[in-house]
Length: 301
Figure (cartoon, rainbow, N blue to C red):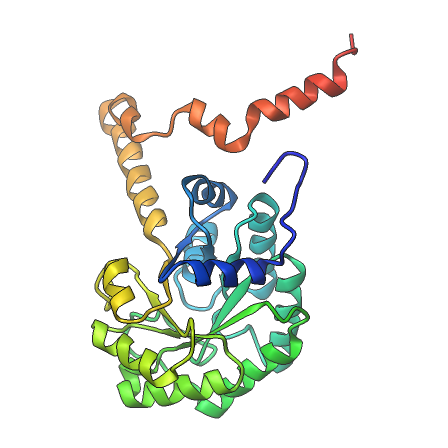
């Protein structure tokens, strides 16, 4: 974001749709905070993501078990969109309540500058998508969730992703049936959770048979292998989500720094793993802010 608060002319949803049309598949990287969003933008990414599990863990110290609230998610969204102009996809779990809660959520997200959501077909007491014993709502109830999103959408470009966790519980054929019903209800894309091989993605793509129809969740240490973008492209996948890749690396680095200080009495051996102050200032446009201070208050004594 520029210091004079310049904003793109297109809507966030339009930005995401344009990025999807230019990249096959589009990598969408998870950010834990506004500074990480700026880092993703600086290296050239075209879309970013706010993970529900990541927010629970890294903002609240909680597991991914539907313990955060709509208010907390909207607050986090505002912090990211205030700092970064990249289109932001938001994990809204099951929608934080019934159809009217979902409508409030959609209106709030659009107002706060989000580009997209994904909403899932687990029960409200959900679990991580790569854990056992998930429970699902009926296809009809999930369709109602999607219709609520569509009806509440005040910007037609706002992008709606329907996540299905049914593969583990019901098998591929039933999961594809759900996916087709969700697209018919108005979803723009299907998030096929916990696919174990590329052929499963290919079958989702073939059955849905629409442009930009399938998103893959490439989350490390999970039921889904760390497929490359080339592999996903060959399977017809349109977007690849990397929800916690940076977060996991940062957590490991932080633990190593804390250990070095305790065991070695210094962080000296960890300096090469740290971002230098000069780069920090570049990302934050620190010197531009200082120059504005000087411009505004140069005549003060």
